[in-house]
Length: 608
Image (cartoon, rainbow, N blue to C red):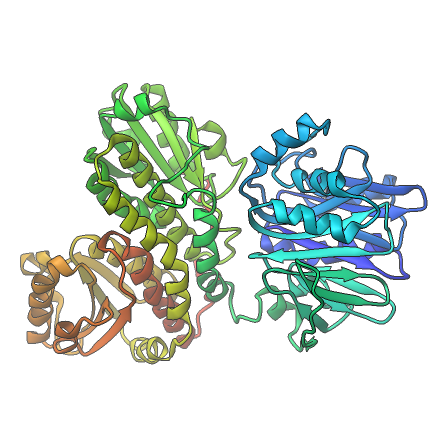
């Protein structure tokens, strides 16, 4: 998730911009840059890599001036490179822009601007913004920005610095965070509070559809239409560590709460107005899709659990047989790979050694490889034939949350895209799923509003030594992920079983007081799941159920029920996992564990 800083005042801007960018390093990035208005005009310094590399460049070529903008980039459009780094400028180098988010219609705008004589230097969607502002500029920067923003679609936080009007910065927000810090004779801009906390604790938080015109002595707030507005000036009393976490106690909790945004960003530009999906980044032709005979999915850990959900979803919608392998085992079982086999590799980091090895094995045997990953420019992304990026932003906590659910969203979109081409699912069914996908962010937000029940249950579970999850169908796949989350941060021994397998051995583990979490969101299997719950209860188990809202039969059987909003059956994993992520978090918290850095574990496994 990219970082933005801006400064205008009476001090030299370069050190302030660099310090602000350093405060945003925790967000993750692959390049950095600054633009400063100097006595010789507007100048930009930017580089692929870490902020220290930008600092080294600025030591040799310093920029002195009282107004500037800076950016750390997490690549989405275009690989990490000097050219793709921000800030971007127009052809005349008079207008510079930094931007967080995604511009959906950038290609259309780029083609239009090229016909008007604009020359582009990068692969990014952001560069379109600077050229568009330049195209509209007629001695009024505010008006030009408003006209440019009126043309773009997507999510964005934008800050503009221009040689034409160097006495102001312009900031615009739509679906991407942006704050204005207010000082004395100086003002600041940041995508997050840590960027400015060293200099001021008084901030305006922009809402969607709002913009700010900032000079050294004033901050004017208005709508995108130019209507002036008044907002409350907030005083921040967090320390810098809490500010990096957005006020949350841990990165894991912050990332759980970022899931609605991650859902929206991953869906952005990939869902049309009707029942169509558009995955333009996947260059599989209709003929190639129709020729797919089988699909192999390879992944590790949490990504493996997402792939298990993917198997059920893809088979249901496309009728193509799908196999799922733990990536570390794939090469060694000599899988049957044919010319018409599509291999889907799922990896958050894109650097997982076992997943890379499995991909290479597949390619050696003639398979097409499609990667689902969160990191542009990663090894998995570079080596795959096709890439579907999850736009979850950096994930800091070792226990994956938003990366897992973003992978689910990407898999749903892929399955819909394939079924659309194959015509294996009727348009009405696809439309229902797409409408369900669009509702997911708001539904997750509603679940995160009140977590008191989850916290109470977590406190009760913090003293147990063993815990079991059961479920049928898709619920069993989610049970596996929920069990992993609990064990990796709470250190409680946890196992997940197919509920129908209880009589085949695992029921022997149930005794008085044994906690069992029963997922019961698959209503076509509800009667059977309730029967399994009763078997557990009959042997003294304490049952906590996860069910769709309005499910009264389970309430009469379980000891506790965590309800999730109603959604089509195939989409329930994207909702049912959320309270179970919270349950793992609060259980670990109650035990006093280091939630973000559990013992013996690393964020990315880059060796076999």
